[in-house]
Amino acid sequence: MLIVSADPDRVEQDLASGAVACPDCPGTIGPWAHARRRAVRGETGPVVLHPRRGRCRGCGKTHVLLPDVVLARRVDAAAVIGAALLGGASGAGHRRVAALIGRPADTVRGWLRRARAAAEAIRAHFTAWAHALDPLLAPVTPAGSALADALEAIAIAARAASLRFGPRPVWSWAASLSGGALLSNTNCPWPAP
Image (tube, rainbow, N blue to C red; front, side):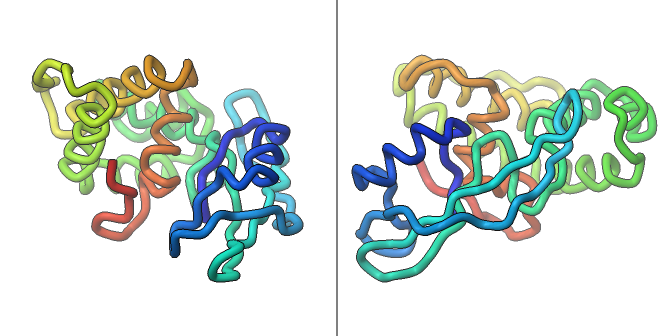
């Protein structure tokens, strides 16, 4: 699984030109059919995705190319999850956050637990990305809690990425810079800067 642009035309151009690198070898990925359609709960309603698949021209492995508006193995869009994390970092409980974003309380509780458990790893990862994208970046000041520090690092890395590569929403950058695995259950699944 790879995270790519949410623009299908750009993905097709990148696949045709060999601009998508294989994560498993030095080869490039070319077009290779589509994955199954899936519905994702967006901020304003369901969004139906039909992710592209790609096949490495070197090792022959196939990869699902998820758009940068989602995280791996999550039914909600990255922006929805991000809104929940921001609510949790501001001190709201999972039930209140769930009511504000219109999601089940158990789902939001799971997101917040996972984010709090991985907060230091998230902070370190996105701080490294921020400094890799902007070497002149000033030190990041603490925001008050481990989760707030992690979200601050995501915002700073997203700003640095937007300044370097062009504007995109914060949670699009969070999905891209974490390889879609922001809330995954593995220790350090994210791609290095």
